[in-house]
Image 1 (spheres, one colour):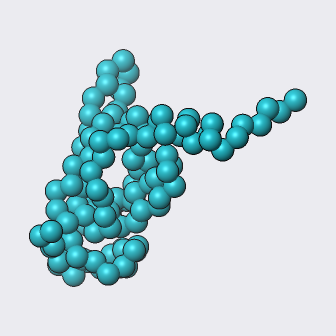
Image 2 (cartoon, rainbow, N blue to C red):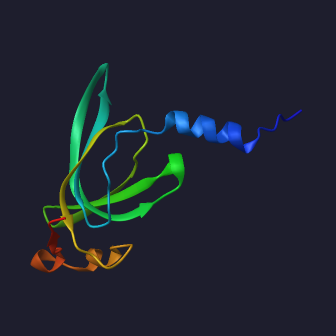
Length: 120
């Protein structure tokens, strides 16, 4: 027999896993994420720095897509921001954008892919 839970029980469970100390992350921000990496029996924090090009809000399943360019090759990673593997999130710079998804940055190269900085 399958036991059904009411919505309030599910919300309480989700809220227990949500992080409370997250900064306000917007599209176009340059962020520095500390990701926990396990190598053998050691655990260390590896930082990933890039521009937020997309965000999906779904309570505990909120994700951000971060893009950076390494040696002329674009690298994108999707992070669950409430995941225990995310150690820290730091917003380094905010940019003025007029789109909710910045997928057009994939087709731009060099200085054309820069975003105008916002000082708010």
